[in-house]
Image (tube, rainbow, N blue to C red; front, side):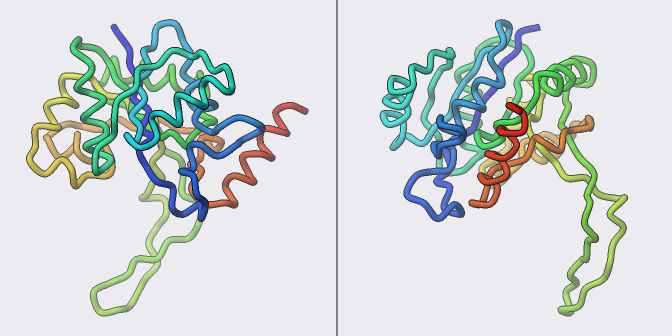
Length: 223
């Protein structure tokens, strides 16, 4: 079955407090986004990069600067994450399986990618989740709060993998732009989401401290 991955890189990365979106920041000497695309460098996997239209030319210049030759198609992003994903989906005309992945999760392993695609082939969907380590408290309408069992919750990662026809059908909903998570949209259309154990290393670079951790992780892998 044909496999695709849509890497969503349309964000501005304002929480990094920098002039560049976080996907373009340097990680071990090359942009974060290059690490992420390289994680999906497999012969049977077609990569589609959804990027803010204002940064397409900048990205192309980076590819020349770093001699980055990993094949990928480029499409402009939308106003929301969901609209960006839909723009990527519109490029795919055949049936198959598609993974949706955050541009700033550069440490996803080939093993996890394969497990997700394999499970999605059987269940029509597969998303990676990890255990919640911290104690959780729920806020109530009266301004109070109470402890909830963390055993009842999972933290969700990407890539989230789906059968193309079912995911595309979910995007026919009029309120699809309001969804920030493909699994939630997929589920709202009456589909079941299958959970797969994720990886602690597959974290999202969101704030400056995350970039520090990412550098340390790469250095540890080298040593």
